[in-house]
Image (cartoon, rainbow, N blue to C red; front, side):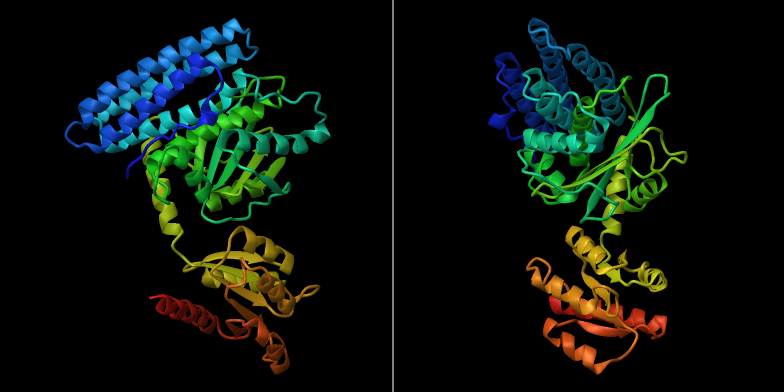
Length: 451
């Protein structure tokens, strides 16, 4: 896979000494991308290239700090601490990992992913802030926080990635949308008196179309380097959002996790976020969830440290690849008992989502288009026929196969929905094994048709 950073005009912040150094750092990263592909010279070339990158980064920090002092930038001290953290902690840890591994491919990808993510995030957030193009909102009342945060995130998504986003829901409830990446950041004050956590949910294609596009990645699949880059870009995104809402004490990043969807749901169910926003960016869905003021008592997910970052990302991608292979089935029924039984019956072989009403069904379908809908015919308020009419009226959803779940074999009901072309009917009183066989046969037939 050939990876190349693509420099864009919007990366220029209008300060000559900073813009020139940014371009140099982009070029150095691109050379390192090329070096890692050459087996014969990789170790020597990467060692020398990394020294060159570090030297330029340190010089860049010095020039940037001098410029901040010259304009009396109010955020200079905080900005300098970020430089110090990257220079004194992040880079040395990555260099040590490279040396200990003998410049192994995974270690090089980890180094490049982290540096790429830092460069993207730092250029598009911290450095832009120096120019005053990202301004803090002031005099926010508590009841205005959610609306204000929505505006901040939409503006930041545009500033960083030129995405025209809009809010889908300010009460996002942990619904699944597409193939998601669930990234949890845990913050605390120095004395750990106050704690909070932020969970970012990215639709996979959003990362590919933003961070991946900047890195010049051509594939439509996540890899180790892209996830590492996304982590560091996301850290700076969250930091920039948090800075818009200053508190009495400064929060520092204490830990981070990559979560599975199931782990994410557990976090969500245990401590409902105070802020839970879902956005459609046009390139994929994005959710921002903020849980405060304390951490969950039971840790979920493996903490990512310098020593285990490579293994954790590889294992996370491996598990996602395995879990994403099952067909997605949405079960829609107003009976909790039926939903539970159907979920238990099918969960081993299928990715199951449950919905208790037509409204919940439409919301789930929009967020995470299923491969099959099992739809209760006799629901109150909006029954199965009306729900199927809504699905068929939307061009983007019209081709989803729907099998009706019904308690009776009613010829009149069947006749009413023939024009909507359901994929079939299942009687609820069938033996569980027969229901399962019908679903299996449906997908087996669908698979055969596709071949």
